[in-house]
Length: 152
Image (cartoon, rainbow, N blue to C red; front, side):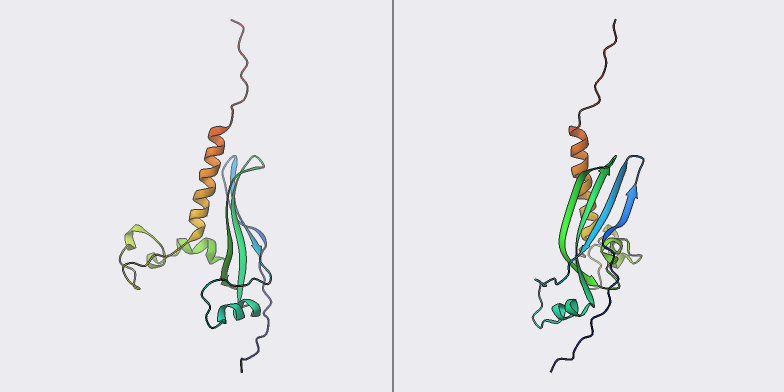
């Protein structure tokens, strides 16, 4: 007999949860909570789905957007991320973990405690990179402002 789970109240921020700004550009991370998410990963015993249903885990879609003067010019999206309800912020913070063993970084390649071939996946930095690349292509393709020829 499986113990009944009490649904936890999840305080989860939908919308923009992280930004980086320059004079004209702004990069935003936007999250959208997925209610009733059906887990599609390895879950032979159903524990992950039970934790999603019980509120211990949350599922969300995310997008990184690059904005130029109030226009979105680059975007990268990822759906179906699953994190603990109290540590979902690690989606956008874990790649900067103070312990290099918890990051994919050159100084730790081949030295991870779990073995030499361990790769820690941090999607957020790749999403930022993809969105910025798309924005750069957009900017390169922009036509400059019309120029007025001087009467010579």
